[in-house]
Length: 572
Image 1 (cartoon, rainbow, N blue to C red):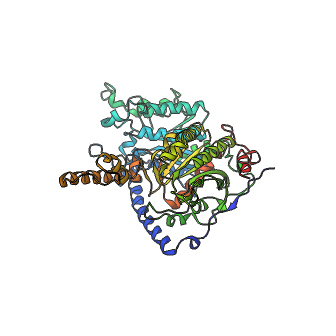
Image 2: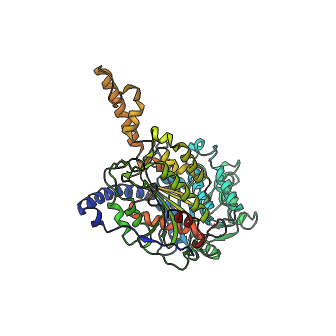
Image 3: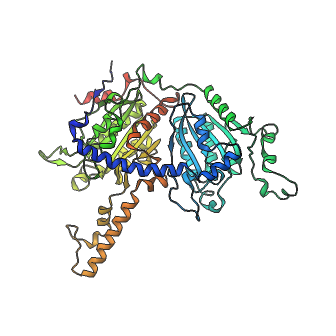
């Protein structure tokens, strides 16, 4: 009988680095996190206290207050898409978080995806990228078959910017297609309507299984303001499409509630009726456990200079339960690390870059740079990825990748073909994949390690993530390559021309370095969330449980019959 034998990984900090270096790294990371914490709070505050007071005067709750009441007591909310639209100006107005909160929330001891209009931001209107943010949350729920809870308080499209959110392939109307796909795949959808629910906002709840309305809520295709004669007839949106109409006449809603608090309690009761999480079943009698080495130590493991190496195995040791790990083919393709560990008591596959120099397989005494994909490493992770997919083991990709190997040797070894094999594998995987951009995420290597274009169920970055084709200096050299000699020095004796080229290269480098700010990729939805290093274990624990919560939609083999055992046996 094949058994999963996990071995101790990692060591105490003092065994592999000095306390001074660790503290310097940690201090640097803490400063970065302080900046992002302030930015998070800015987003979570919406349009500020004045708008919160307006909501409270109507005896309503804010979106965050609704989520707080909905969640299980003592549990933590895990937002995604926090920085969407961050820093964008819409004719003097901002849209914090694109005016909608999307988050993983534990309700009745199971996770749900919550989509809540931020009613402090233009009465919950849909801005540019609001539809895409809603759809992203819906796609996560569809992939994992996780219930969706809509907390609707939406005044419709933010009309001055409608051209950027209404017509396209991922425009507002695609939300309703996602509603339909979720329904057809039997993913529970429950809606609470708390106030405005106009036009597109009115369509969103209808396909839900259950719709609740408060006495202040209304759902209309067009509000009273757009109906001819409404003023003279003293018509109101509440009168046109309030609970009197939709609960008792049109049947577009199911139940009415006196206030926000009662509605939220009813949603909790509906979630309680759903099947319990299967996660405990898939722990196979085991228990969740913290890493032996605290996850908070991740703050001090990453050097201030992104060019300096660190030990990826020490990172994994601070993510997996009891710091236990089963590494597969450790002596093959040493530039990549593959293996299985548990997070929250649940088996997860890991594929990670080895940042250190590794031995060249054919040139004795020669070393090769880490963070690069070579032939054997690509072949190893392709086989491991396919095995995880066959066995039903979700995969966590820990990226710190500079790209593929280049040059004559790489082409002779057929890296284009091996890389295509890996891309094909990841494109067809059905198992959930979670991608973590720890530090560098560069070139085609970013794609090959399940970057966003390959539909990971979640992609998160960190305060030190550098996502781009290549770093600023290298890209500047590539841009001005025709003006440089074989040593990449400026090939001109004309002082004026030299100064012009130097300035051009410096400008390119500065622009690329600015574009690599994690806020840039987060605000344009290239990543789902910026997660602090000390939060990383918590996020992975949450998404791991979500991967195992629902049964019957993908193959999950018991560990005795894993394909991974066959791969492991072949190494002798």
